[in-house]
Length: 299
Image (cartoon, rainbow, N blue to C red):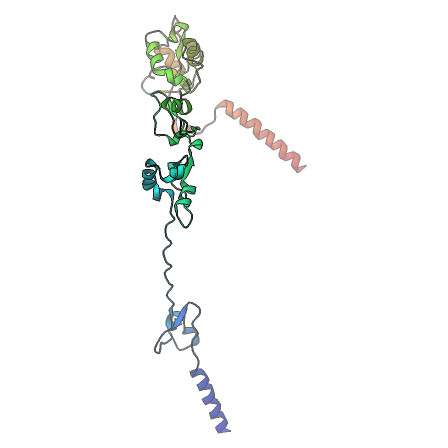
């Protein structure tokens, strides 16, 4: 019996001694005789018994070839009748396509497909010409090539296709008409003033009548913000308040009139956020209506 017990103990010891900490995927067993951090199985960890398997560094992905890669050489070739014009093609190297990716194997056919545009499909952006002073260039407008070879565009043709007059607004006339206002001309003879609040308003034409119709406001409809007058010391302007002229000719506002219509004492901190009476009235109506609706929903 004693021999059997001894044999069993030896078998058990041999089984334990033959054990090995299994390193998981991504780890390899340390060489030599590494030890756990304690005397129990729980003390054996990946860090104590294993080394992390180095992750191979992936090969760098080559940057894709784009039209920008070939811009300089193809523009030079185009000037010599090659590049996009090779074989008599009526095409040009399109600087608007510089970000286009070129397909493999990156040869001339692939570059042509990605980077060249027919002169018939050209836009204003594609022509190295300038618009006359006072006009605006419309780069997205169609501007196909013409001439004997279909690859030219005259300055006149460019201006017709690509250059537009900016829209007329009150801002177009503001400087000149404010000077005229100071000389009692412009809007002034009609008991009106050139209203800078209307800067974005469209004007039909350059005629004085159309400018007056769009940009002049009666002095009787002036607001505090329309007058170059200051409040008395300790008072602050309220620009949106009505401030019609009070002079005998109906074209000026006195300091007294401006002070009464436009100037207020500073708001006390204790009154910050208070609603005016009109808003309080509207708010009370909304509160009452909301209460009634809730009452009906509960019923």
